Length: 301
Image (cartoon, rainbow, N blue to C red; front, side, top):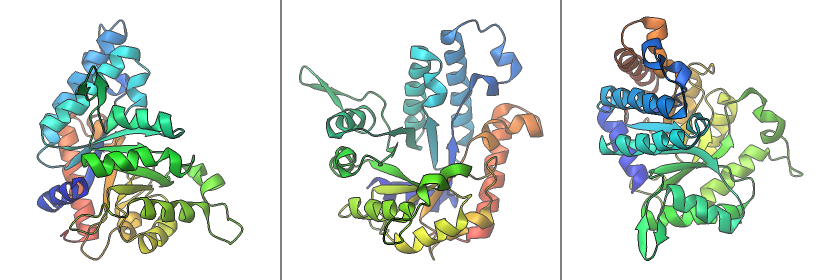
């Protein structure tokens, strides 16, 4: 079961870190950017950057999250780099999260799910377009737009992370609005996520249908942790967005389990702050994050 596999990597490394490969061409060292004249050259160098990062991190972090927007803006070559990054991370044994925040009506959602979690058939043969273990999903179209993803989770041992309480400053404009019975929208969405995951729980008690819960909103996160005992959290907001280990401790249960914490720029761009090679500085930043989280959360498992 995919969430069990992620948890076991976290326990083995004592590290609930997810490295966000939100790799803009502008994040690359100057010498890597020099001479690039078009999308193809930029995309090739982005993948080269990612590949070296993965080589430096796969033995100390359990997962990566690859944000598709940073690749789409380089056109078709960028999407090729996105796909190559997904496949290379999987080859190195990492749990791979495609951060694409997909959703639509049921039939279109099924196509999105096929692209990232399932297969697309061509004359009776199945092919994986953008293979990932997890996909981020925006569920605000309701249940019919989520069921195709849940179906693939159950049938193909994949997972999703549904947007529940996001880390951006203005998330409360919608997510904290109160329904007629006084329930905040984010709590109502969280309850749906818990329900959608029923029947996919693994041996650690967490389902394949997880929730995106930002570290920058600890009060809401603490509330969701109590309300959603079987829901595993993807926790953005650590580092550059202002979240810290103390703020996100509430996302974890008694055994130090229940979530994985994303950090993107703090690792990708660590070399700009600390010097050294981009991959060496990234490894040191990831290890520093591991120490910070483990000291605060305690032993995992």
